[in-house]
Each structure stands twice: as C-alpha cells, then as structure tokens.
Image 1 (cartoon, rainbow, N blue to C red):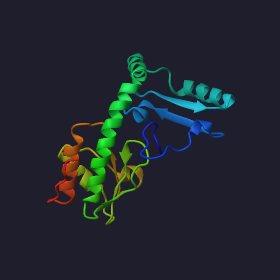
Image 2 (tube, rainbow, N blue to C red):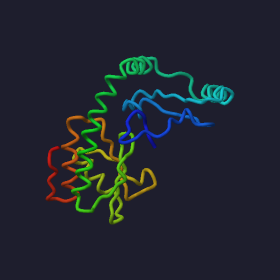
Image 3 (cartoon, rainbow, N blue to C red):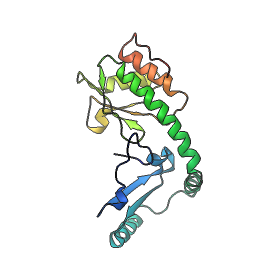
Image 4 (cartoon, one colour):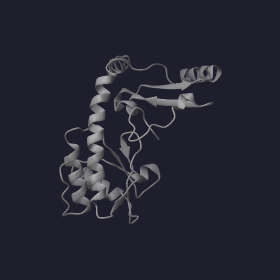
Length: 185
C-alpha cells in the first residue's frame, strides 16, 4: 500500500490512470493528519461515482464544519506540510533502518517502498503484543501486529515526530537488546 506523495524509490503507476480503478485516500494517510477525518474517492466511471455519492448520503449526514475548515486550510498549505513530513520521514526511516540492522537478527522487515509506516516482525515468531505493551508503558506507542492479523509483526509510524523519534527508537532497541545503543544519524 502506498500513500502518495511519499515514495522511497521509483513511484508506482498512478492508480487513477488505470482502467476500472477506484482510488480512496484521506488526510490521515496523505498528509499525516489523522484527526481531520476528511477523504476522497477518485473514479473515472461517472455512473459508479454517482452511486458512491448517493450511498454516502445514507451513511454520513455531514462532516464537522470545524474539521472541514481545518482540512481546507491544510490543503491550501499542503506544500509546507508535505515538506515537513518528507524531512521527518526521510530522517526517521534511516533511524528505523539502523535499528533493524543493529537488532542482532531479532527483527526483520520489508523496507517500505512508500508511505510513512513500517511493519517489521520478530524473526523468532514471538507475539509482538507483550513487547508493544511494555513499550507503551515507557511512552512509545507502536501497534501490535495481531490488530492486523499478523501477531509477530508490529506497525511503526515514522513521520509524526520529527524530534522525538530517535529517542523512541532507542527505547525500542533497549527493549529488544538491553545493551543496545543506537547511534545518532
């Protein structure tokens, strides 16, 4: 899954250009603004698009005017928001890569090709929930993989915190290998 505009390599073909494709996204993923609850659907098929809009009317009466105002403001200033996110995500992805490389084989991953989340796993097959719960007690919030049907995995976002991510990764490293020291990049 990719969430434009963050790609860590060549971008894939744009989905709106694919035949019979429906693209959904929101400000949570595209701009790391999860509280705004504003999204969109892109569909080249006008008939299907009309059915989607009609169905939306049955499920959603209206959005919050305050949230819609904030979403409009964010879209108007998307260049600045995305530049900050790109800077943070690029730096933090390198920090996360260093953690996994230095974890002594305890963790593995498929390095993300896009987006701002990763889904590393324990190579020994252990359930990540106790690990994630212990980290939550230390103030580091990562989602255990059983929330996504993959108990040995964990979901780690790497774009929100520009200044505290290094500290969080050090705590993750210390929880993995109590003597681990993650170097500053």
